[in-house]
Length: 237
Image 1: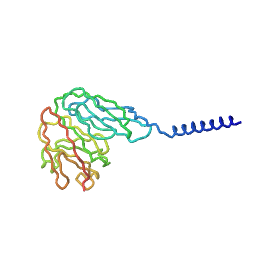
Image 2: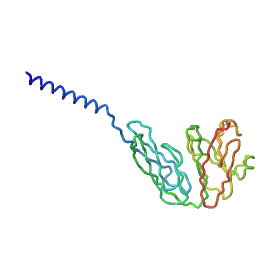
Image 3: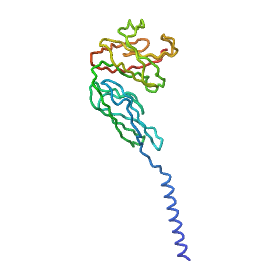
Image 4: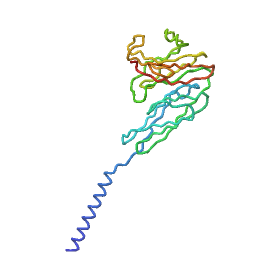
């Protein structure tokens, strides 16, 4: 009888230990690794100095906030998050960008995408227009305008204009063939369709300063030498 009680007690202790281990193992969360499902580049063949839209689709079973990092072999990445712009190099060739997606625990997945850049001999002017990070106004529908002088801008005499590509707080634009010369560039979204600058319009320019003291930087276009610019956009007070 004593032996039976001893074995029964040991069995209960063993069973309890196994149960606690199972509960402990079930309560521990296994951290998953983010998975890059797809990386796309549109277009994947462009002229020197052009712009392509790079989009990364990634999934994480833990639904963690993911960090996207891009390392191009040439040119420059502008933007942040899962959708950015790749400003192509000014020289033709085959280039690639390494894409890294990282979760808060440091787990990461890596992929890459290739871009073929063609020397065109044209003078292209391309770039991005954006609000500061954290500002979520939509720049779609904005127009980018070139002027031969600041006096021409004041008089509304546009040398060339184009619509932006994309939507959200950062968009891109391209003038594929600009005659060599000196220009001034601005970005304008006419929010109330008044055809004049008014409160609430989105306005930016190539240069520096603010609405009280805007500084327009001359844009010197040379034959066969593409230019890339970045424009900060503001809401007109």
